[in-house]
Image (tube, rainbow, N blue to C red; front, side):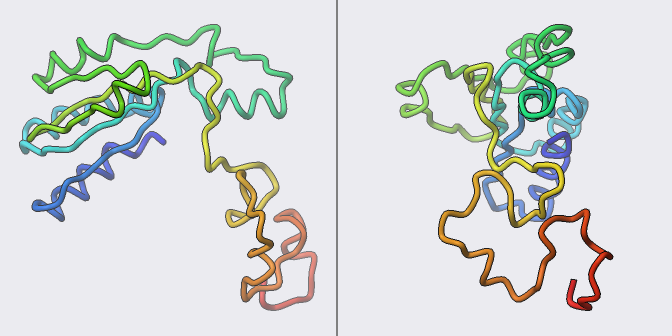
Amino acid sequence: MGYSLPAAIGAQICNPSKTIYCFVGDGGFQMNIQELQTLINYKLPIKIIIQNHFGYGIIKQFQDAYFDGRYYATGEGYSQPDFKKVANAYNILYRKITNDAELDSLKFDEGAVIVDLQLPPNALITPKTEMNRFIHDQFPYPADNSISLLPYNYPANPNQVGATNDSTV
């Protein structure tokens, strides 16, 4: 999500003694890359983990589900900067992770760091919101039928909101 880095900055400012981890996709990171200046200006030791699958992953999933995998602007037409050069431009430590062994040995130093976690281009993003489903009923779907235990009487899908006389919706 594009607001991950600004949210992490706010969390760090409000909790200066805590370690803050920012998980963001490669596309979402680019939406607020300018916030790295704020991070450096305030000397915030945020650990930024870029889940890099070389395209707007959540949009790719929508394109798979609803547009027969036509990856315009998520594969074709998508590019990204060299995140190592971006980190160097802001004097932020950079680490690139390309396999499980590197991930297992990852240690976070003091201070800010950008971890470029390289994922397969079509790695699934979870949880993932889907059209016409409530927020509590998203992929991956609960296997234990726990949704039925919620204290509300939800209609079958959001399009039916207002079509019921049930005042608890």
